[in-house]
Image (cartoon, rainbow, N blue to C red):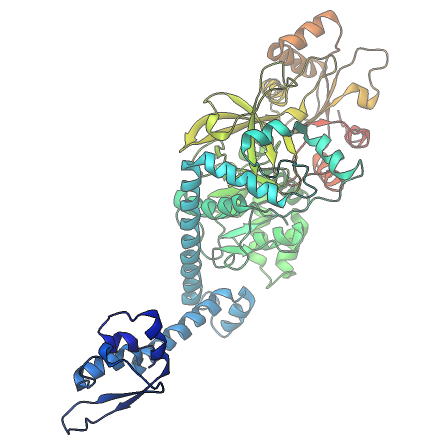
Length: 621
């Protein structure tokens, strides 16, 4: 009867015994429009194929009057008008999705018959609203998941560990019946990152790193980062307002389909750095400038200064689109005024620079803020290390990056860092056990291999989000100088170098790298020492007095280094000025190394002679 419950109709809602219930399956129902007695209303005739139909369970009256009959029929007969309206809504939804998913090129073709500047603005606005609607819905779901996981961090970390155990390749986890965090940490020892790589690859060279991110943390960082960015800087993500000038994106999990609708003028895709920069230069209305990392953006601006005239000629000739002679003239005029504030002269509406935070990027951010991107805000949606997202940035208005350590996956532990005892074996803590103002090294276990890997990234806890710590990244233990056991950390050396550069008249630091003298065999006849290579702006020559200031600042920053210098066990640090573009060449060489990481971290200590010699050949003073 088209979904009508016949047993319920005939028995008045009473359930039949199991022995009699099967009889109803043999009933035949006929519906008539006129009653046999001539009165108004239809009736239902019920016959049975069984020999015996227990009448005691039937209602006495099988006749259904017209009004009840219509009500029953309406329960299982759809309204034609409702069906038509539903189909119309489905077609409209499909059309809207089609408009949203269409790439920019076909949409531009739709507007070719219109005057320039009036190419279907309503269509772009519709796509933009649809994209933000879908993104907002997805971000709200991710926010709910994040709230739940950070409120129940112990349970969330347990689930993250189980996920890693299930997906681990070549699992060495014997007690498969037990997956609690305490048993796991007691069973597997801590492993340094370099040792883990050697163990996983049998001492062989690693393949080139992948530039893809995986896991829910990457998706959370992208969705919540976009929403936070739009909230902190309203109306920056309008159509055509964003351009990425590097092949890699700062968003850990790029969203391909709504990219153009959310404002991206030049999605990176497979284009090279020059083509991406050219497209960005052709768009004077940019409000957001994106790059994979701050160091990569530094190389982009250095290349822009070096090849500015060539790029202006390409824009005037229309090599990547319609000829724009006026825009080419604006580019030449902006370059003539020097590097300071160049970004705002090129893009007057620019408000924020988005880059992905990774190891060794703070110096590049400082250089960009002091020169090319002066007056602009910087935002990093996440902190990434070893190809994964370690921290989420939910506070773009903060001057220094603060990151929430999510409960995973991956499974994150915290190893307390004690001054002068970084090598001391200590028990790790879970996220809920972190203490404010304490420093910890990150220990990560992911689904690729079952290894409790010490990343070397040191964080300081500055607050809490529900039960999870909010941290600031300080330094990397792998970038430590030690030629006589003095252990000069990355942050200690960088602070000392910064104080020294302030004393160099007119100098601005762009980049630096240190090399222990044993790597270059430069300590023959003298005590071992640090070789320091710097790239500067505003200073073309270094006097001996200027060079000595770095060694004095190092002695002030490190009592251990000062003691060794006083005894003559360590020689004075030697400072070398390299030419412009040297560090861009160094990063290109690092990218070709089989063991290079993604995201591309900027090393501050070089331990390979080939790379150190590359810098040595570029010394100008």
